[in-house]
Length: 589
Image (cartoon, rainbow, N blue to C red; front, side, top):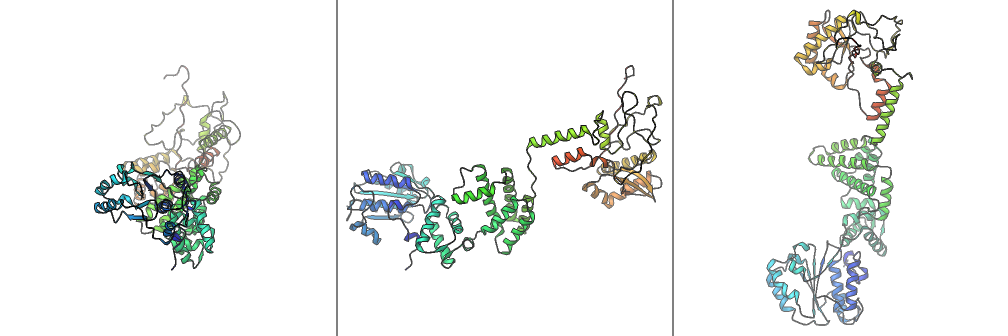
């Protein structure tokens, strides 16, 4: 009959116990020196060697030929009983099914009898935390002062449930989960001696699924060999464990790290066509990114489930990524995984999350942003033509697309900009702002000769509207504001151009929100009613194809530098109210 690998490869000596060197060394030294305690407590997770070590200790204590050696001889009648599987002087008790007071009373009666062959009678009580409270109380006296020929070995996976009175009567040993490196080495040795062909990349999948338990790893190895028809490969192990294919997991992680949205969607599509569970697929990608983050932040302390070779491979993958990138990816995928659980379209949730992760913003250091802003300021001071402007107001005029102000003939004071017959004033003041006081003829600057007007190119700003049209437009804006404030605030960004064929043409820098507002039928009807009431010869509004107000500002190098530095967008451009001249000495305040 076939014997499973977990039983076939159970250690027969202390040196063969994997990953518990501190425990086995202490027990070997105690056996060699004769300092054997009357009660031991072995604690730790499943499958790490508690029962195996208890049997090795019992075998050494029962050996009649052993003197000062820590290991049993393996040849005396007592040792041969262990080989046959029926040791006379070693009794194993399952506390889960023998947890009452009556069973403890029977044990107390039996400990009086001497061993049949060996020098000690050993009781191995497995899952001792399952004993009832009265059973523990009945066990205390025998556990504290057993007969000289009796040794108790208690084993448990949950020491917190054991009363402190029992813990204080035992010599405790804590068994640790077996490191991934040792598990991989042990599986490799067993497969080699069993003559099973295997793919080295398949072993990490078994090791991670075993979670530090050698017994679990060997049980999974048995199943994987049977599934692969005598061969062990990465794909078959992944399918057996219900895990995502490591190739697909690495493909999606690489696409996200490389900011490649198309490759990320292709990886998700391949995983879906191959029948992968997308939620599990997302979970495996999250786990891989977590390992990359741990290795990136603490390269000297890689995750315990990784072998050194895997840690080096993941370190190379994480090298070009930043910690902020990995944290962002983890956050996005964790949110996507939570959304997938309750969504009728889990694939869409994963795809949206993958695109968000691949299109993540570039992380820039604060110092770099400050340097770029300072560079933008230097370019602003130098101006587009290399001439340093005399006043900041000139720069603002450039940003709004108007002609630069020329220096006046006396003292270099800026002259007033050329304008139509109407006095210089803002075409449409912001909501709530008071209009500047009108200047008298004595306050007007001396007239200057204007340069001949050049033809406007396709990118130039439109000519300023006449005074009557501008005032009529202000009445339209006020009427709309009175009925719908949000729509009126949108119209404040527009400038009237001309009345053509019964339509008032206006130009503006329109964002997506503005366009949606103006495209709404109810909003357009409201605007057309106000236009028909206040603008002579016009019955409706049309957006002009000419350049919008402030179009020159959008192409200005300073604006472009600011947009590039902060990754923003221009929502609207509003005109600037001209500054009032500083009062001269002697003028009234």
